[in-house]
Length: 305
Image 1 (cartoon, rainbow, N blue to C red):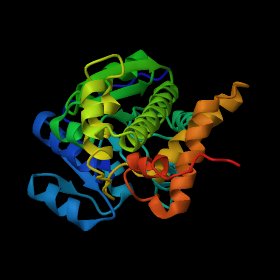
Image 2: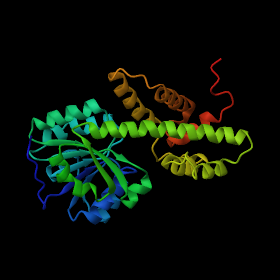
Image 3: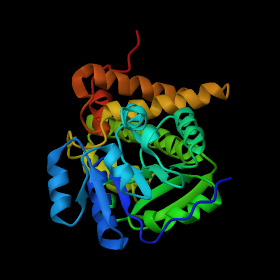
Image 4: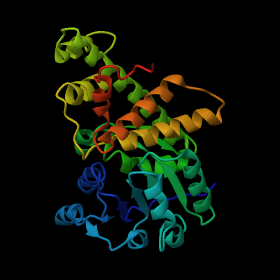
């Protein structure tokens, strides 16, 4: 196993300044005590973070050349692969003892493949997918599920704690992704249950907000109820710059893939996957994923006859 040492003078690199990445960077700037080098295809977050003290890189390769630890916060495995394998990407430009930390939710198989390929260059890949909301990213209260050796975990955990209050070592490479994927699988099924409950309540003469506020006082309470239910489903608020239905289906597909590899058939997860697909086919793919409430509230939407 490689010995990894984070030089205290080393810079942090960050690629991906979207809804979650930009506030995470802001917390790293404020709390890490290290210089930060950032890159994104969009000029607006680069300009904002530049005004706050971040150094602006010209490319992924430029970030890699200027940091010891590189964080990625990209939308999907496709984007991670492009940063990893692209011309002058991470694989071509990585140096010995550098560490790459992937904060996104991605394929377990791909994660382990990237880790093996970096190990061949005496560098390391850590999967550390983030959970909770955009507000949590702004507040620095995310939950992070890490797949890494204990030594690597101890190396990067001080940086992760700049933007997270819950940081859990879940096991070796890929274990963080497995845990996050299953977190999302449970979340999507819970949100679907809330959507169905709200639809039934509305059609039965019970006000949805009252329903969920009452459920929050009993055994049906959950993070999903208080955040996705009361803040999205009840007010019918499904913004575009949030965790979309397309992304939700992507993560559910990872869960179903893991189940298949284990010879399992999770029927509840498969059904919610079909509901997410239906929402996408109805033109709701870019909307915040609790928009599946619109599917639950369609008369006869579950009628297969």
